[in-house]
Image (cartoon, rainbow, N blue to C red):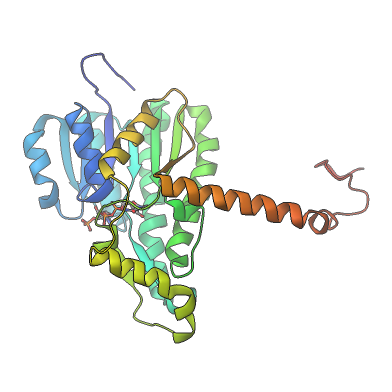
Length: 297
Ligand SMILES: NC(=O)c1ccc[n+]([C@@H]2O[C@H](COP(=O)([O-])OP(=O)(O)OC[C@H]3O[C@@H](n4cnc5c(N)ncnc54)[C@H](OP(=O)(O)O)[C@@H]3O)[C@@H](O)[C@H]2O)c1
């Protein structure tokens, strides 16, 4: 990664640059003098940026569920700039509904974008980063990648998957000089709730008590009765700070709400682990010395 004192020449590749976090990050980077591959399903949505920053942008058509578009977008980026320094896997949407309410087709569609789209992009970009022996991957997960809630379990499961993929990937690519950061935003004021949530058609009355609350929050945000706390511009700055850092985090939670939710989860996992420790430990063979990982010979 080259970083001169007067200008940044890092090349960022962002999926879903048209709106929300992707757009906020792209604008912030371009204002700072960096180079951005703006990818979008509808290129008209990034036209203003390519006009304003014509020498430091490349706009490429990219729907992450279309492998040929992913491969082509990366090829175009390399052809124009010769490298990709930071990949931001940001494109995504959410599915709202109790586990039983979401159809198989809707689950698969959700994984196509939030998980398989990320995997395809990783497979396209990693050969270049491995060759460069450097790079940084930001995978936009969510607090939902740590805590799963009633009514959003399918979306949450895609973010849990992204967390596992990212955690393993970080260990695999660290020796090659490539870093991975999982970004875990709480609730941010993007188009996510208004335009990127798909609500199930099927609603089973029995689940109303458990999921009615989340559905109501979504309606209240859509009607602007309540607003999301997080500012996407500040999220963009935090992501850039994480990439700039010598000690980039594996996980970066964003927003006070995210910190509270994740802390509560960590404490409850620890408390339950301790409460059930004896039962858990007693499942080992007799010859195993508790506290050691090796089986006695
Ligand atoms: N906002 C939050 O509170 C929040 C919290 C935690 C995590 N997140 C995560 O943040 C990421 C971005 O969401 P956002 O909040 O910025 O929402 P947003 O404003 O609705 O933006 C969603 C972006 O994803 C793009 N996208 C969706 N499906 C795509 C596909 N198949 N191929 C390419 N692009 C696609 C959209 O493109 P189009 O314009 O073409 O639709 C748009 O650019 C998502 O991964 C989301 O899960 C958001």
